[in-house]
Picture (cartoon, rainbow, N blue to C red):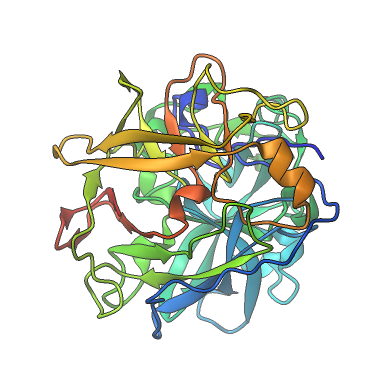
Length: 417
């Protein structure tokens, strides 16, 4: 088995400290069978769409949560429902692989243009990058509809030459469903726009060219007003369910499970199935969407609840490092740990307990499993942030309150659980 990590979260100007990583484990046989039952109660209703946690397209990953999203030409004349779209609470915007658009021609989605020419975008991971056009489409998630939403089409066949500051940023191109492991990304972070003010004032925030104008196929980095960036689909849904989402996943046994099923409910406090109740609300900053985390008495630069990361990612030199899945933790015995999360400014705090087991042992003995609640990895050197990845979601109801929208918790952006 082997593991690798990639950045799924957009990182306006802080680069590494805003990274959200995921681990892909190569197949192999495993003992036993394991599917997790849904939690009780599992939200149901027209505003709910199922979540599937599996190994992703190509069956080479773990802890990959996905949903189905319907993409239509503006006005809805031609539509296609696309499955295996990664559900990511740590990034903003819908990104669809061009190769997945088999029924909706890419050229039927109007391209966004800047004064200098057609707009393209670079999405950078730790081990690769994805480049594509920015286009408009009508989007439907469950019963929620967003009209003329700005999305990214990764691997657009109209792509010009990849800009050097995109391709040189990290590894190889991951612009296909098989190389990426999914048909796209549904980014439902607490923030409203892709990279917000960072991209309005700096054409290369974090030394990356996020947005480009490409007249005649020659690309140059440009600044981009927030209103013209890739948009959070939740913020732009018609009806009442546009102030956030609730994500519910079942508990997973210590040895893991082959898969898990849960639910994504649109809205917070807008329906009987998405009530915030007594959940602890942690407000986040407006730049990175982060709250505060203290681990083993050390305050960290930021915390994020990120379903797009397939493990807990944090720095702890006392935990044994893996030899096969390099960069991940392999303690001899499972470790019971905890950290304190607190709001960016609202004073709310919560102690969260979690377990870290040996990634090498779990993945070698249960190679056919894809759902694990106890895998963790190290942050890059010099990064003191805490990334609460998909394991955080198992057995919990997690709410993501959208920037500028209101619920019983007040105005977003926030996370709650």
